[in-house]
Length: 213
Ligand SMILES: CC(C)(COP(=O)(O)OP(=O)(O)OC[C@H]1O[C@@H](n2cnc3c(N)ncnc32)[C@H](O)[C@@H]1OP(=O)(O)O)[C@@H](O)C(=O)NCCC(=O)NCCS
Image (tube, rainbow, N blue to C red; front, side, top):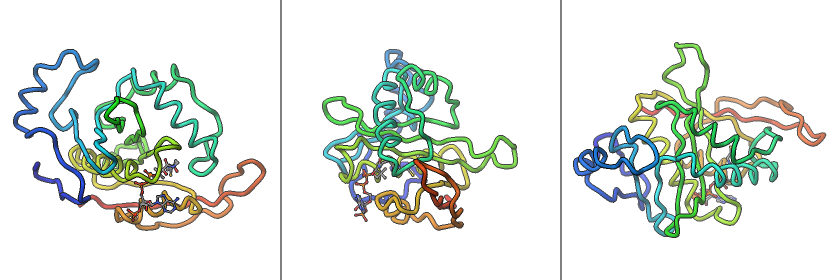
């Protein structure tokens, strides 16, 4: 197991030895995008019945848009109200730099069940060591450990990229989200009260952080 991996999460495992992946990565021109290192290649978990977590490509954009739009429409996750198109998400994926990856959780049939991303926190260089993140699981796939696996993969990737801290802003009423973040050791920084106005209602926003150590 790679140094820096805590092994936290009882179901997580790598499908290949890291050294073998370094060799493999050099011979994978057909992946649809450049593979920069074994860390970006693939991580597997059996937490959700053999899910694979891998780097997203533009081909995943329709699924990413579909899952994001479910999160937007459910009104439990985000103050975003504008639904996205596959074309818009394809541009979004294509524009991501190395430090801001998008990961997808894919089931054994190749269906994308969830996605997560490391996002810029603030463009000022003093905040280069801080990343915000997103995690969204398809409606019918929630509660099966996919969010847990995606967040673990995002944390691992953040450490590998040298981030010092992850932060998030969420609805304190989002019970699965709160449980997920607390389980992963995120602590509350504070709550913005009546911070957003969604469908005519005031929404509190909780800010949480985790030092990656
Ligand atoms: C929040 C979300 C990412 C969690 O992913 P998930 O795959 O459903 O969650 P998991 O199955 O990995 O479960 C994570 C934890 O939440 C708990 N949980 C799951 N569903 C729950 C529910 N409805 N109520 C309370 N806790 C719940 C699980 O028990 C688990 O905790 P445990 O390991 O201590 O038992 C997912 O529900 C989702 O995409 N929701 C809509 C979008 C969203 O809210 N994104 C987060 C934006 S801040």
